[in-house]
Image (cartoon, rainbow, N blue to C red; front, top):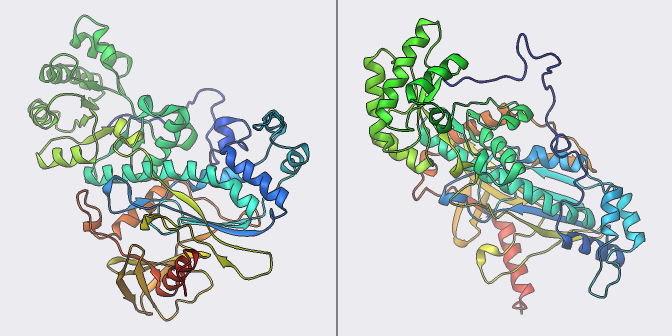
Amino acid sequence: MICSYQSSFPGAWPGAIKRTHMTTLHDMYRTSLGLLTDLYQLTMALSYWKAGVADREAAFSLTFRRNPFQGGFTVACGLEHVIDWIRRFQFDHSDLSYLATLNGNDGERLFPAAFLEYLRGMRFSFDLSAVPEGTVVFPHEPIARVRGPIIECQMLETAILNITNFQTLIATKAARVCLAAQGDPVLEFGLRRAQGIDGALAASRAAYVGGCSATSNVLAGKLFDIPVRGTHAHSWVMCFDSELEAFKEYARAMPNNCVFLVDTYHTLEGVQNAVRIGKWLRENNHRLAGIRLDSGDLAYLSVEARRILDEEGFDDTPIIASNDLDEHLIESLKRQGAMIAIWGVGTRLATAFDEPALGGVYKLTAIRKPGTPWQMRVKLSEQKSKISTPGVLQVRRYYTSRGFLADAIYEEHESLAGGCTIVDPLDATRRKRISADIASEDLLVPIIRAGRPVYESPKLYEIRQRVRQQLSQLHPTMQRFVNPHEYPVGLDVRLHDKKEALILATRGLLS
C-alpha cells in the first residue's frame, strides 16, 4: 500500500500540532465572504428594503431536477461549509467600501449609504433545515429549506448553491467510482486539473466523503485530515541515465514509500526493474510498496505485471492504475479480469468530467406577513420538470429491513400518521400508496434556528461512513450505471392537488 502521512506523529517536526477542530472557510481564505454572491441578490435586497418588505417571511427550497451522470442516486455534500459560511457571515468595512463604488446606469451610486449601514448591522435570524451530509437524495425533493425574513433568505441563495452543488456533484461521482471499484481503494488524484485552488480543495473533501480512501492533495490532507498518498512522476525516471538507476536512487531516498511508476519507457521492462530494486529493498529491511501503471492496455499490462511480480515472490505488492479512469472504465477493467488493486482517479473525478454541474436550484415556495398564514407560491415553466413545488416542505423517507422504500414530499404542517399516497411530480398517473405501519424518518433536520447553528457537524470520516450505509440501503438496480431503476419520490397527494390548483389559478384557467 502507498505510504500515508499523518498530521501528528512521534518525533514530529518541532512545533507540529495536530488539528482538533474542523477547518473553517476562514482558515482557507482568511477574508470576509459576505460578497460571495451574485449582484442581483444585493439589488433585490436593496429593493426589498426600499419597498418595506424586507421582514416579510419567506420559505425557499433547494432542489435539483435529475440525478447527475444519468445515475440513480445523488449524495448530498457541503453542509458543513454552508454552516460555516453562515456562522461567519458579515459585510466588513472593505466589502461596504467596495459596494459604495458601484454605480447604476445613470452613473449614480447603486447602493445608498443608508442601505450599506443596514448591511453593516445585518444579523441573520432565519431557520435552515437540511439533509445531513452523506445522505442519498433524489430529484425534486428539497435537500435544504430556508425560512425567515425574505431579505435574509435571498442573501443565502448564491453561496448555498455554490457550495452544495459542487460538493454534491463530486461526492456522487466518487461514490459511483467506488462502487465500480468493488471495495478496492480509490485514490483521488485530481489536484493538477481541478478548477482552481478552491475547486481542488472542495473536490478532495467531497471525494473523500463519497468513498475515496485518500488524496494526492497535501493541502486538503492538512485541512481536512484526509490521508494523503503519492509516488513519483515520469520526470524522476527521465532525470537519470536509466530507469533502473532512477528506481535505485528513489529507493535510497524514500525506502518507506517505494511505489514505482513503470511505464516511462517500456512497461513490462519497468516492472522487471521494479522487481530488481524490490529485492534490494528486502535486503535492507524495506518492501516494494507497489507499482503504478499510467498508460497502455491496463487490463493486459496488469495481468502480465501481476505474473512477473508473483513469479519473483512479490505476491503482496499491489498494482496501482491511473490514466483518465472513471466508473465506466473501472467497471470494464474489472470485467476483463484486470489485476489492479488500487485505482488512482484524477481528472474525471475532481472535475466531474462528463457532467460538470449539478444544476441545483433555490426557489421561493411560500410567503407571508409575520403572524399570518403561509401563501403558496409556484414558479411556472413550459417544461414540467421546471415547475417548482409550493409550500413549506419536508421529506419523509420510508424504509423496511430490506432498505429504502420511497420518499414523500409533504407540507410540514400536514400529518402523515395515517400513511400517504405519493404522486410522481412529472406524471400524475404514477402513484404509490404507503401504509401507516411502514417505518419512516424526516430527512430535513434542524441546522440553523433564529440565525444560530443548532447542529453539530459530524467528522468527515463519519460522513463517509454514512454514505456507505446509505448506499447499502439502496437497491442494487438503482446503483447501476446504465439505465438505473428509478427510486420512488412523490408529492403527498394533498400537496399534489394544491399544486395543480395553484398552477391552474396562476395561469388563469380556473372558472
